[in-house]
Length: 158
Figure (tube, rainbow, N blue to C red):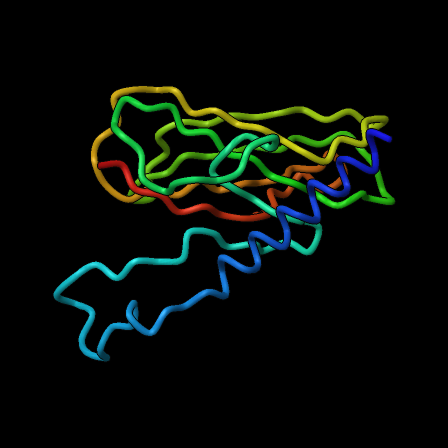
């Protein structure tokens, strides 16, 4: 029963993620021109690895509701992975980055016998300077030791 509920929630989040990413209103379109005079907004998420189902700026049991945070507000993010046939000890890390400088790091260790798929991170270091931030989700497996970028989230602190 619990497994069916988790699968339903994950599928719902995947549909929500895909529908939000594909929605473009003609009112939102910008005229083509040089981008050097102003900052161009990037999409709020980028999924890179094939084993990532979804990523969002909210805990896994909630829906993402915003991409802008106050300097003293905690930032919560979650990552959903597919079931892996090859299970080994690994570490899932989330890095809060501003202008390529590390602001805060959160890591979750996963044992060889764990089949964990959802990971929640909370960045609480405050106050944060105003600006544009990224959360980079990285997996480091014990077998190869190389970090693999799984996904990124983009957000603003205002």
